[in-house]
Image (cartoon, rainbow, N blue to C red; front, side, top):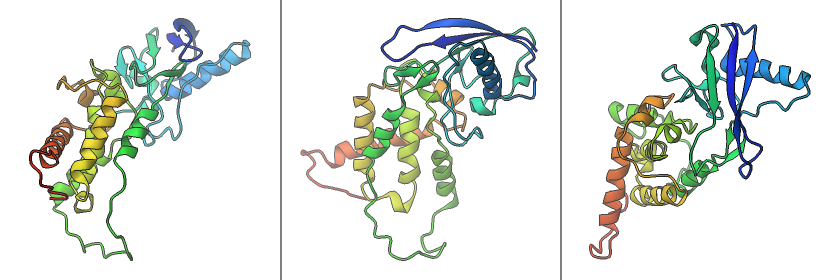
Length: 258
């Protein structure tokens, strides 16, 4: 198939960016989207031009490294699919594809389609460690967890931190990401120590990074390649509110780990 690609090109976060148009022929429907970009970059390199910078690692939809906006949709048109797992059979001959990076003040552009998502790392770091004495390995059934709760914890832990939720949100909020990272510990017995303070610290870092507030628009859930649900935002907000009440000087009593 033949494609017309309009790709955002930007040398660095301080430089002015602009779209550049490329024509690419002979694209196989069996290629992944990133393989198509590899072909484009080989063509650009052979012509003595600067290849398009895009981020990737595993190319199996696991690591969360890849991600950009395709025709206005984070990760492209296929639901619950990362851009590295998106195949060219999702498009047709003659299509015009517009590619641009995640748009958020907290995600400054490094180059072209690559953005700096280290703000996510700092939010996770604010969660700190769990002060539980691990000791020797325990038997698998030593700590009983209800299946419903373990399933919800695993669903939250599926978040790969790609940033699609931020790119899709009109407020550029990272509430879905932060809620998922808080939830997967809050739902398990091992995560109860510092549970409330963890939520407070991570949400405060979220705001410090420049992410916007959540207005329950819901597009983040639709754009998430792992299907993380809005219920994790509700749980995060509940934990944060409890933290504010439990540790308020007016209350004067701690309910640590309750």
